[in-house]
Length: 391
Image 1 (tube, helix red, strand yellow):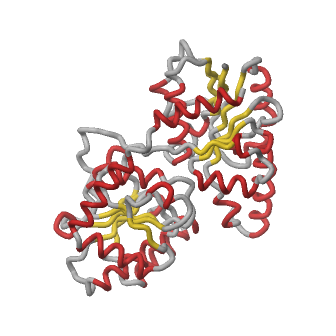
Image 2 (cartoon, one colour; image 1 turned 60 degrees about the horizontal axis):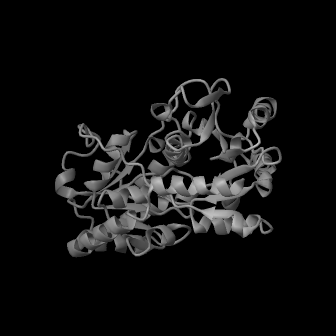
Image 3 (tube, one colour; image 1 turned 45 degrees about the vertical axis):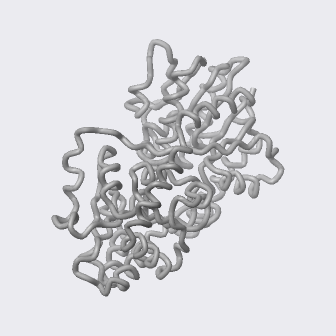
């Protein structure tokens, strides 16, 4: 079997996001298997570089790094598709971890990874106006439509598989393979400075942490803040109440209108002194940020899998998540599931975790057990078996 793999998401704007993590984790393991592989990559560095033996693995370069979005359509037809046709052998399979680079499903047996259907479900393809939204929606489905010709579809959960069947009702169910993922926690002895962005009294007061989010509507960051406010109400707004730490550079972008509006809402809710923004944090700081918190909270209204939830459970941190999309499947009874649109219910859950040490320890143990279900090694092995069936 000869695999041609699109690895461009390990180089562009997605390399540190879930899609880029997925590509890195799966492909790095496939490289250790006895299989003929050709990697399609842009020029420059990749998060896969430490795993590539350049004497054994063929790399086909596609020029300067480009973002994974609808603008790749021209690049696909002028460069990528001709390259694939040239590389194709009798036993070749094309593996596409993300569809925006182009789907050659009519030209070569293709296995596509489908992460989610957030864009069509929320009908938000662009936030630059109605015309741009309609334009990007048309391009999205122009490309995604080719999924119907794929030899196999991999999804990150049964929930995403169900959504795929909703949009592609005639696609054979036997060729859809839900394969759970895992988290990506960097183990490092050198973790000095992980708490440099936290208040000096964080050890005395404690903190809840929200990471892996954005200001996209689907992420429901407002729900986290409003739930936290209800939690403070239950504590009578004590001056020693735990902080809410919001981690990630997406919440601290300068001159960003959405960021400014989000911070204004926090100020209007009277939470300015209680909500802490870390800004960018290094991968090696993810685990200590999680493990030193009271609880991890994630209330996305739609999530294909939720890698950050697995990372929290692996960090011995209780999780509070929205009772919808993939969360019941991924978390099960190992966390507190709440209505992310109900601030009072969210606040009550935070209070339960905060005030009941026995309950907190119970969820830590359940989370540890649940996290053991997930493994990148198993995910890669199952992915390899899908390729074999795709032939």
